[in-house]
Image 1 (cartoon, helix red, strand yellow):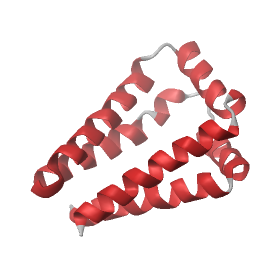
Image 2 (spheres, helix red, strand yellow):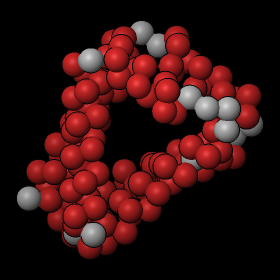
Image 3 (cartoon, helix red, strand yellow):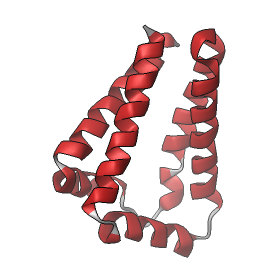
Image 4 (cartoon, one colour):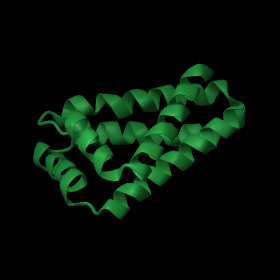
Length: 124
């Protein structure tokens, strides 16, 4: 389980760095991967990440609260994407991929980077 938490931390560090450094390129890549008409299919990703984080929280007592809260947030995002009306989730995706300013996208990359670093440092 600790290995999966390492993978998640490294993914967040890598994605965050990619988003901060290559904002428009990252936005295009994520748009091609995640912009879909079937948003309910997308809900599986945050739900799975959340389950891994919650299970990992119980195996690593040192980072229990951090990982548990991140896991609960990820599961709630997955549930929201699954339960939200399709037009509302489509509007949210359109806003994120087409209307946000680059500074907002970089800030999200910074948050991903910091969360990845925090998780990685606590696992060591």
